[in-house]
Amino acid sequence: MGADAHIGQAGAAIAELGRKGEHGRGFAVVADEVRMLTERTAQATDEVSASIREIQTGTAMERIVEGQRSLTSMVQQIAAAAEQQSAASTQISHSVTSITSVAKESAQGADLSAQAAASLSRHAENLQKLVGQFKIEVPATPAGQHTRSPRGGRVFFFLSIRAHLMQC
Image (cartoon, rainbow, N blue to C red; front, side):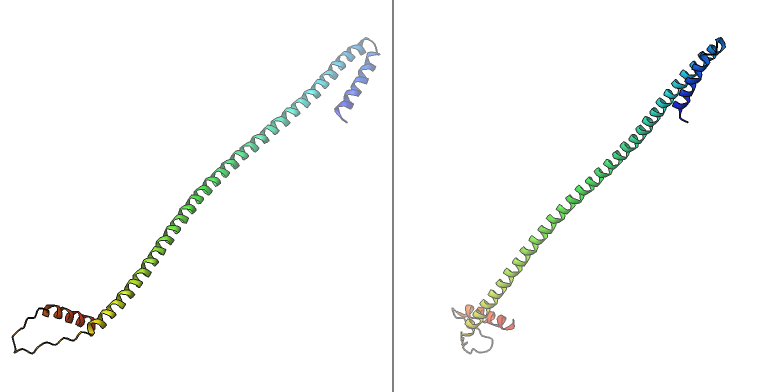
């Protein structure tokens, strides 16, 4: 039976004792005090139960709050790591862009060098053809004698160039 049913039965018993004379009234007073004490005990038990529930709820809330703090800390760490990763990715991107730019400049420089070499080769061929058109007659001189003509130095120079170009 529930506590309320017991209290109801106790109230009926007290009323019956009150009708039984002087001794019955004394028992009725004691029984009435016991009934009130029982009611107050039931009320106190309810209050204690409510307090326990509040404490348990508070403890659960504290655990929830602590879990939330821990989760917040983890999220902050993840965010910091993501920022570092983003900065590193940006730096790598800039480095790759710089390397690409240097590679393009190197390729352009190599292309210009190849064009210049081809142009020099064509000029050398043309110069060789022009030098090949010159005919130089050197007068025969006795051995050991050198003749000097005003153009002799230039002719020797062109002959040296021609010999050099033929070796290439």
